Image 1: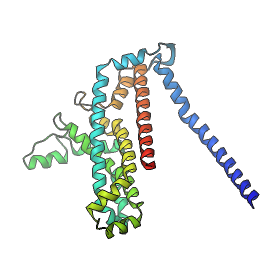
Image 2 (image 1 turned 90 degrees about the horizontal axis):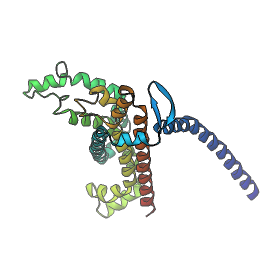
Image 3 (image 1 turned 135 degrees about the vertical axis):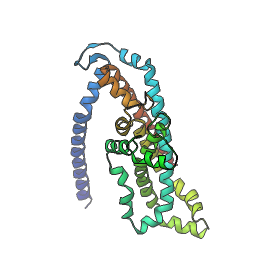
Image 4 (image 1 turned 180 degrees about the vertical axis):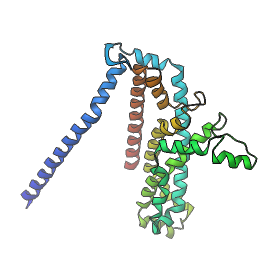
Length: 295
């Protein structure tokens, strides 16, 4: 009997290794070659007209990118945008989880309705808001004008708040879904024991649920920060990075370097630096979460 069990385990391990090898080969082909090509482009003299990158120039592209003041403006916008959106999204998601969890436990189909904003393409979301927020033909400015508030939400004064609101409205459901799943995974015995001790309602959510789902909060916060930090679609469609450079995120900055200014090497160098920074942030989040779960 023991020999049979050992044979089955060895067969399962061999099957797992074969699947793992296939997955590694697939990822190497899908991600490995583009990554190596980008690394070469970042240290070579390359342009939109000559993508061979035959001239090796070392770290010159990185030095040019770092010394460009527009990079730091775009980076500052992206950091501030990502931080504000992350705080608002995770905070609203937590509030919704605490309020709606009892309702969604009895009527889980309502969760699908709450996920609808996330199903819309960000580019399509930008087109939609560009139509309804247009100063001359949009519905929202028209109603604001009717109540005595002639506000241009796409103008220089309000554009920053507008793009933040659009990002939060679309991606709060993502944070809500992750945190709701973590809340539903909390053992019912904890709730019963807390009720016996008098910890119910807000006290139960604060003292019991919040510490239990904290690893999920950390992970979803890092995911949403990275995603908001590299925002491109709806801002590019809505404002093109304007007015001026007021809403130029780091992704839009890289796009303009590559396609508008034909500075391919510099654009790729910025992309590589962002990739390394994102991987470092994600690794830090995972290490912190694993350590927190182990304590």
